[in-house]
Amino acid sequence: MTKFSDLNLDPKVLKAIVDTGYETPTPIQAGAIPPALEGRDVLGIAQTGTGKTAAFTMPMISLLRRGRARARMPRSLVLCPTRELAAQVAENFDAYAKYTKLTKALLIGGVSFKEQDLLIDKGVDVLIATPGRLLDHFERGKLILSDVKIMVVDEADRMLDMGFIPDIERIFGLTPFTRQTFFFSATMAPEIERITNTFLSNPARIEVARAATTGENITQGVVMFKGSRKDREATEKRALLRALIQSEGENCRNGIIFCNRKVDVDVVAKSMKKHGFDAAPIHGDLDQSHRTRTLQEFRDGTLRFLVASDVAARGLDVPNVSHVFNFDVPSHAEDYVHRIGRTGRAGKLGTTMMICVPRDEKNLEDVERLVQSAIPRLDNPMGGSAPKAEEKAEEPKKRTRTRSRKSDAPKDDAPKAEPVAEKPAEKPVEKAAEKKADKPERGRSKPRNDNNNRAAGMGDDAPDFIAMSFDERRKG
Ligand code: AMP
Image 1 (tube, rainbow, N blue to C red):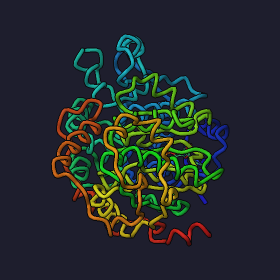
Image 2: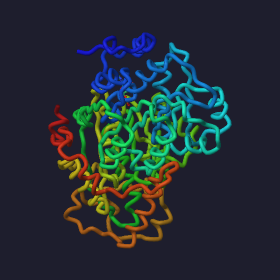
Image 3: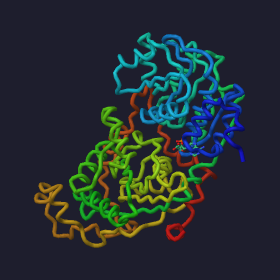
């Protein structure tokens, strides 16, 4: 088995690794670090949870040890799709560079330009940035990229989804042709392949197992749910979420609840708090200090539930998440794999539960096609009775206005037998809202509409764990 000491890393990096307690390199680290240290370009096909951040930060620090940064001329550049991911890379850098004198700056939206300018003016060895913010600084004449020796593109597939690829191409063009490039992506969509062919030179290609490696520990389920009435569906769905959490009892230590739309992130978080759950929202419209604080609380265990959008939670590394709840079926099938990958990390057990309303059945089909398996159907823990008192607390006006003789209860767990009651006019409205919710922090081109491509994207790589039955994994 490879040891860190076999990898030719700088002794100061090795010393920092000892402090982290890591015993052996992960496969992406064992594969990427040696060619990176030889000066080669690296193409890493790996998801979060594989140790990929260390796979590029460790060799970067080793390579940059010698040399000094000049004012406004960073010596290396790490591009990340989201602020949270950028902050996580910065944390990795701090951990592995702690015995060196290397400096870094984090350029992300939501932080004042003035502070960031001051750091850049001093000269930094490592600049970690989201593409939009980096170009803002460049356009203001505050940044010169002609001394960049190493450029890293992290989570390139997410950059593609968020419409950042033109920015990335532009940034590649602003850095010297002689730079060394480390490029990481979970998947190799044709557009990503094109970029790597254009900007990487004879890269060492390292591919590690997909989410299956973490997903084997994840127990999955979906509750098929239809509101007793259209105007009560949202309230009842929130009650169902609470019932699902409660049905897990003490097993549910903490959890991330994913919603497709920012507006629902806020509503669900507020509703959970009102019902006594320790929950807070996180999405792109909240200011950076607020997001950072909320995340830290969740990491520390002082916050039990994080209600999140995909963009805000993408790539987050929070160990020890016991549960992931999909309040909505993701509208991009691949997000399902990313969402559930927030739990069951580092060999721990995880549970994930999803709510599927009739309107989302098409999305569920896409998810199941992508993962090439049926997600086990769960019983509705509310059975035949809806939590009336709780509904009253939430939407009193609606209820008095629209009284019905029917039971309040969401009656059925198997909506395949139910007619799909969908107003045709709702679809475009919802789609428009989703687009807004998924809007990149600063995209300069339209995100691609690739639902179909994505559904096909996983091909034969579908995680094995998804093929296992719910019961099998519960027992196991
Ligand atoms: P990443 O894929 O970069 O998001 O990393 C996932 C998690 O793995 C992080 O919590 C890292 O701290 C952890 N990690 C990285 N490298 C190792 C290693 N060699 N051994 C154990 N854990 C690691």
